[in-house]
Length: 272
Image 1: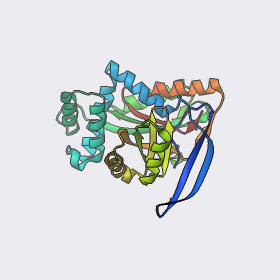
Image 2: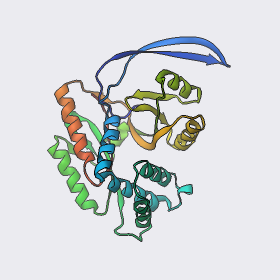
Image 3: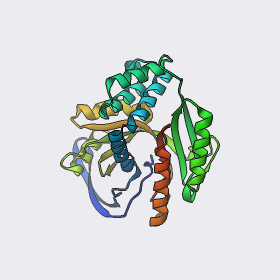
Image 4: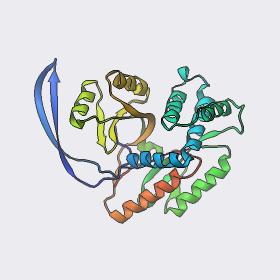
């Protein structure tokens, strides 16, 4: 399973993996690998989300996510996983309870103009494949604004299916590192997690979409704090871009998309 778009400066690190069979250690394997640095896009987005929350901008995006989830699966979080995750994320961002309730009402059609969930695909600077998830009450307006952003950023917006085949749907969990990241990663492996990556603000765990909630519950039962859990699009084969100027241009473009009020999530198939 591929990782979400990342920006990284190469720094080599050593990791030791203990292989067990029937409870006995049968091999100790040491890997030398390149670690992603602090500019990883998923980390940038999370930090950006914290800054947006200070301005209140994130509440608009969270409210739309809740309304869309209600529209798709009903207003009961117990039977609507997408809604449950959206509400949990709103609580983590300290979104007022009244805002959450209003967003749920809007999703049922009782609290204002109905929202539609839209997915836009295209290519950014340097031909980077991009998927944008949005929620809007005026799809024609938002589509035109997305087209303008792509063109101003040096890219082109494509038709449905033009980019999505380069991504796969996955669950993503951001777990606390703890005091010893290597021990935490081995603990995750012992819990049956197969796809993990250490990033600046935690350890990213990737799952099959249908296993997201189950694995989150498993981690929490083991005493591992979960910062985030959501469904994402992971690039199958991220394209490498190492030029600093090109990297900066791509990141600026991605942030311009993410700043749009209707945009919920932005994914890009690139390693910088």
